[in-house]
Image 1 (tube, helix red, strand yellow):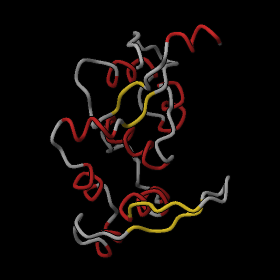
Image 2 (cartoon, rainbow, N blue to C red; image 1 turned 135 degrees about the vertical axis):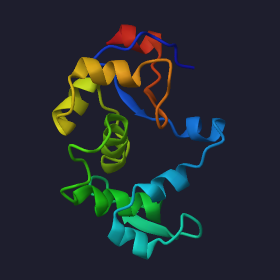
Image 3 (spheres, rainbow, N blue to C red; image 1 turned 180 degrees about the horizontal axis):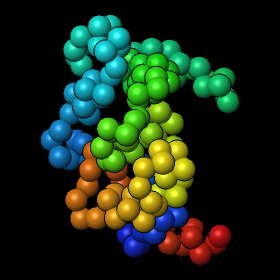
Image 4 (cartoon, rainbow, N blue to C red; image 1 turned 60 degrees about the vertical axis):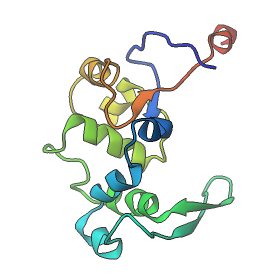
Length: 148
């Protein structure tokens, strides 16, 4: 079980999928709302979307992934307006995690990708008492941290 530590600008964050369930919110409904107009014509609803076989380019392993997630990662995130100056900060951060397959990133790394706000403002936004869109620090084990 991870121990909570005070996050700093180098602390890694990610989308905590369990948070959505614990809050009684539907991640799939939210994912559908993040689709570009073209993908919304393919996925007219968040229900009954198919699983897609996806080949990991690094390991060549085949995984079944949600069609909404796949569309966001492979199509929507490639569009120039996926994240723009009008995208709210928490939405921009969420979309970065969608695009990178939820690979943990620090506020410094998020700042480098989205260019919005300083790493300190990003940290204050996602490390406060309010959890936005399930974005939380990656749980760490204090004993593992001591080994590093």
